[in-house]
Amino acid sequence: MRHLRRGTRVLAALLCALMLVAAVPAPAVAVTQADIDALKKDASGLAQQKKELKNKISALSDDISDNMKKKELLDGQISVLSSEIANVEEQIRTYTDLITQTEAELLDAQQREEAQYELFCRRVRDMEERGNVSYWSVLFKANSFTDLLSRLDIVNEIMDADQKVIDDLQALQVEIEEKKTALEDQKTQSEAAKTELVAKKTELNVQRERANKLVQELRASQSEAQGDLDDLSAEEEAIQAEIVRLSKKLAEEQAAQGKPSNAALGGYIWPVSSRRITSTFGGRASPGGIGSTNHKGVDIGGVGYTSQIYAAKAGTVIVSQYSSSYGNYVVVSHGSGNTTLYAHMSSRKVSVGQYVNQGDVLGITGSTGNSTGPHLHFEITENGTRINPLKYLTGYVLAG
Ligand SMILES: [Zn+2]
Image (cartoon, rainbow, N blue to C red; front, side, top):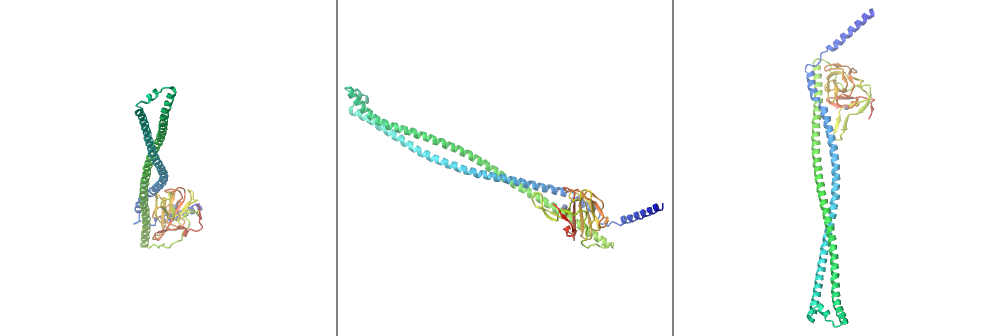
């Protein structure tokens, strides 16, 4: 019984103490939940938009890269085609020269044939005039078979000589005609090939123009998206500035209430039991390789979804809310312009205005907001500027 009663008294005392702590007036007369809510509204959705923009930029970058490769191939094809066309044009020129030459030869052969025929006809006429007889009458005038053969031989000789020249000339003419026909066929084929190649080149040029235009459009979209991303980063910076402002205002109010200031820097403890750093402070390449994200804190892994998150230093909670970037996050003020931030919690255990001692539990680790796995994103702001937390957190292990 006595034990029980003593236990009850102890419990009552504890409750009183707790109520006293709870009764410490929140310094929230000017810095209120409304201010934080306004901030919350601003921050909400920013990270998601930023993420989407980054993905867009990354996708655009891939598109540009693909398109540039296609363009390079097109340029190569066009270059080869141009050489082919030049070659075909040279062939056509050669054929044209050969045809011109052949036509001259043909004309010459035709003229020689005509001349020869003319000569033959004149001879016959001469003979007729001389003997006042026709070719045939020369033969019919034979007075004997020997005479006939003799006359026939004479006629044949004349005729053979002329005929052979005429036959030769005709054969030559046929040969030249055939040669000319073959050359004209080749020329026609070359011209058809050239027409085809020129059409192909025109089409490739159109494709290349299209590719150029697409690259230009993609670049414009990319720079627009990068511009939007820059705007969002600027907004996030504005939120950070607001956090600093709130922290300073709180410090002023506390000073006005005669509370001791706690402006000393440093003195942070690890906010979780894990010492595994999965991402360090500073610039790091964005997934798409376009621009970079400036990492304003450290990521501590190996925490799962159930680790307790401790206040790295005593102070007053000035933010405890959800945002699409940080998920569930808490900001503790440690004096004017000095804060610590704890992000991606699965749950928060403190509220705005609450005073926390170093080591008090602020929440439980998780992967809320812009996070791909459970970790604690931890930031330290000193004199309004975020600094590398590893300046204070010793004994860490760097992990990939
Ligand atoms: Zn982080």
